[in-house]
Image (tube, rainbow, N blue to C red; front, side, top):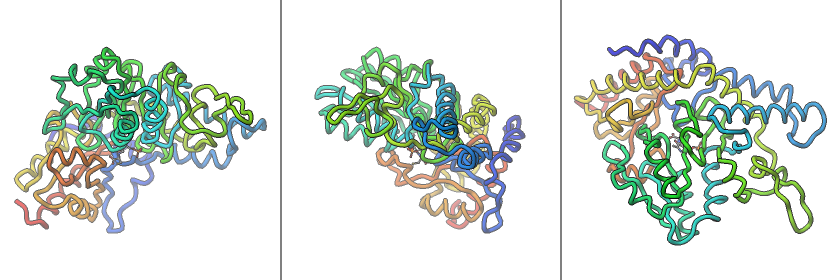
Length: 418
Ligand code: C6P
């Protein structure tokens, strides 16, 4: 058994902050929640923030002059500042609230993309992308006449960069996920971003699977845009954000229009608000933005470096234990070196359908995801119909892996494998 235990004791203590994890399943099994890549659980502090807001502070923001409205506005803008600090943005004005990373990417596609791309230009993405970081670019390419190109990945899901300079020729936008939600691959952004900029491209990073799990410094990365979903980082659903460099955001037209995003409206013309409000039309998701601020407080108190190290250790441990099941037909996917991947492990068990595997695991209290993980082109390239996927977060402990292994052995027995 390898030692994950330096961090296991702390993870065990942190798990107590997440009330949902204390429950047993309807079959009386301990809950082993291994699907945080889909959506994380919420600590009590985030739940309390939601209850506190609706109990004490609820009012519309940026409008009322009375005390409640002023307080709601103050907390809402304070949450923006927390998020800015969390990813080391230069200023809170560079953070735009969105519903999730999908909306953040669509905002860039419509607002930046339509005005900046023309026939002869190219968009470069990769074969690993989630549909949210692919479909918007397919549509943008179709609308503008730009070409859509791909960085290829090998059979482990590792980016192939030998011909990157060539692929970057004529590229105006590079759009990449920081961490693959299907294979856990960490993209070599330190190599790609400087080359993309040298080629004259703007860079958008889909941070859905990185920001919850590792320290993000958008200025050190030199990302032009960076999108995040709050629900994957201990925050509520329905809130996320787009980071954008001030100069880019200022030059972009609004995405949605209506109230709050204006400075002055006359019958036939409108002057738009300053950033970030120019991009926040209508009443915002106030309570959830504030609760995302509470999630940021929580994650920072735990320490992003600790979270990353814990997940790396959990993943290395899980990979080692799962390799014991290879004689039973278990196949592991993704980068072989644990250092090249985050806390996501995709696999298949013999020729059993991953949905059936996931259903058997469920009877043992183990929650995993199965399917194409919104990466259908990657599945097609790899020749897989689907995979099963376990993913780890700060509250996962060695016992979760033990439970996964025992449940997989049971599944192998049921499918008469090995
Ligand atoms: N991946 C998963 O189980 P939204 O739905 O907007 O919050 O996140 C979309 C998204 C975009 N990019 C990446 C890399 C993602 O992982 C996700 C969400 C979940 O893998 C749900 S499909």
